[in-house]
Image (cartoon, rainbow, N blue to C red; front, side, top):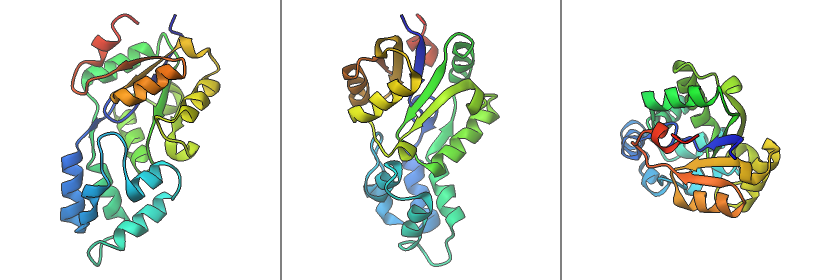
Length: 203
């Protein structure tokens, strides 16, 4: 029996556009290294270090600006980061709101402070107050752990306080789903662009 649902964010609740983000970094900042940092599932280099909690958001901004055009600002870096994020589908918004009336909902995401500020704004713009709709947020940069390590799943299960088998995890990365199952959770792969409600129609 499912007693709680845990969502990945990027690619599941929030749409992503890697191409638009790369273009922004190149056009606004002149930062060409971005092509070696962005990945659909696991960011690399200094981006991955920020998501793993090894460097701060300010450290990331400084490192990017050191290789960007003169005159660029930290706000420009944040603007480029925001280009990755496309928003929420209406079906996703409705599904999250409806499920929140019947289940405690949680977030488990490889993510970073810059993106989370933008994402929380998108949630609020869609009538989803993060602090009330989601009973807990397990964010990699805060935990200094990354999916698909078993450590982050064990910490999430402990934080929720339910048996692993009573927790359903949704992610768009099959490796993360397999790791969640290895930790004892129920888990399903979400295909980006499909209705979230269809994946969870039996919940």
